[in-house]
Length: 243
Image (cartoon, rainbow, N blue to C red):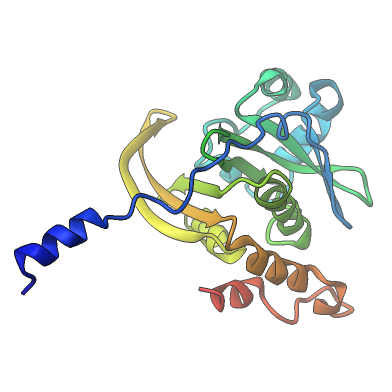
């Protein structure tokens, strides 16, 4: 058992953090255009993007299910999409982007940088959805990897967050596959479409990103796919091995 003198000495040596933190840039998210081999991210343009976003949101098997855990959608016509995109184009936080296939020029979904806190170097990627044609594919993974790299490497943010409805098994699985760490659940955190939502939290730090980025690069490499487009090594296996 520690003596009173030892306890007093420990109290005097209590840690208060490793260093003072300089603020990061906020402007780096607004207007950002990012590009990879197969996918590009662009700021929302309501006039340009409405038709493509409506198509991505309404094609394929049960497209309405894409929006089960979203605060928007499903959409019944292009005017609903246009009205939403007009608002999202003007938003400063969240900053919304669309995901474009470089080969076809068509959009596959959209998302945002949000909860941007430059004073502490923390932000989140959210509002993420992909049309059925993009789900569980390399284009979606590349789009999210580009966003992760922009926040953690290009802009030097210290922490990137991913939050989702605790009941959204697909989103929770995606976060882990991408290399985020699970942190826990905030109970009664939000109300979405009139329903109470518990929120699952995930994070990735600036220090962790280089190893995760290497896993992403290895998985996205053309050498990881056979002639039929089947993966040889799963991203989940690569990122699970890190933690």
